[in-house]
Length: 257
Image (cartoon, rainbow, N blue to C red; front, top):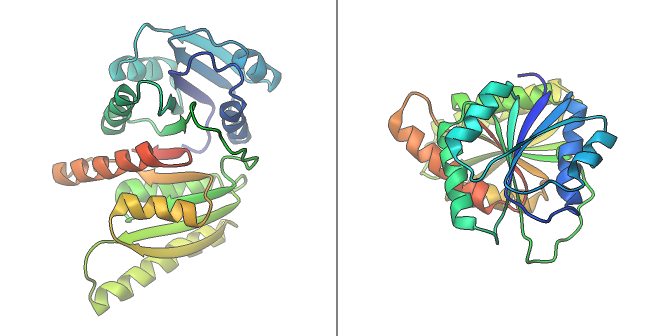
């Protein structure tokens, strides 16, 4: 995956004609080659389609009565999308929203972008583009390395990049040396791709510390690897951590399977 040409946008929001922040997030992806957005929704889309047309992005809509992960993944497959973007509200049917997120994280072979809004709370305008300050969480698993390769392909639109690793066990001197070397190699890859990157080590609960890093560095998006494809135990643990990050993040979360 070197660009994003077609997005399947899943939204439960109703009456959100003035949801300009969401459209701004989608519009910023146009720089990655976005050509078409396919809406799957439960309510009329209002002005959204007109706004995207003004950006020269083709629009297609698929209306459903209820969201099912299998239906979303089937449409994604049939439409050959590059990315599934899911737009939810923490104050509207959040229990079913979290369930949908968890099932997609554990089942999707497509990259996922979760954009969560707070309809009942006043929002603070953030004029920064989606990829202007990226928090990249890594533990050097296959999914994390895949996320890094994607970020390297996005180098032309990235602003600052914070590489974050969380340790949750006591490290030996050898462990510390290896960790330092891994962080240095990862940062060098980013610098070689002309990405302004810094590396940071946090200690504690992985989801909590990644969310802390996002606040510390005022990130605009979090990149994280998804579940493990080979190890069932790691699959469950990784999926659980990713879900907690996506559910609680103050910014959009990009999940790479």
